[in-house]
Image 1 (cartoon, rainbow, N blue to C red):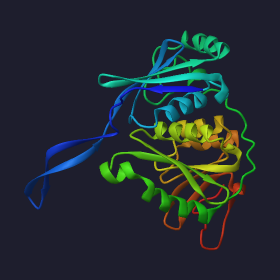
Image 2: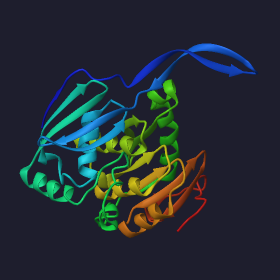
Image 3: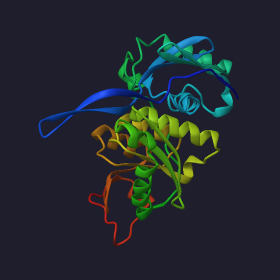
Length: 283
């Protein structure tokens, strides 16, 4: 895959003289804020989706989105990628395998539009909740590693420390090492960026877990299952549809990973507990 890029917007901007009130008194300060710009994803010259995202790690984002949305089946089907700054937004132009492009055009004819979640705008229920593969990952993760990972992730979230406005996703391997931390104003985008970065690094998705600093919605489990990620751990709650999807696809879903507490909603066999880390809820 060949990658080309031109000047892009910064991932954060600065606003002067933001008024902060404390005990009734206002004080002007200079404050860093996260940028959110339209990112147009283009395949073989045809615009497919416009996502609002933080303009950083866009190669990772484009590849991750393409794989988790089923546009590509593997990395080798992406031949070329060009990132172009265009006024207030960015275009990511990709050249993909002919077979995948033909399939994408067939799918587009049944669609009415796209929005930031990557699933909205579809014309039928079958398109919105598509059939997912059964996850075959045999990974087992120490619960203590999950808790240490979330502690480490907070330190690694540089954009969050500056702006307070972004989510993060990271990869946790079976040995407890945290890698491929990616941040974005959108939780789906952060996960796509992380998964794309991991693909480019040659990560085996059956050998670790995805951790996310958001709720575990259906889309997050959907994306993980598509790439055979066996465990998803979130700092917040899952939705009911996310739990049902995890059960159906064989994903281990863990929520409320905070302090020494976590809740296991399904697939408890992939989590190795210790007396210190007892799940609040087990399936």
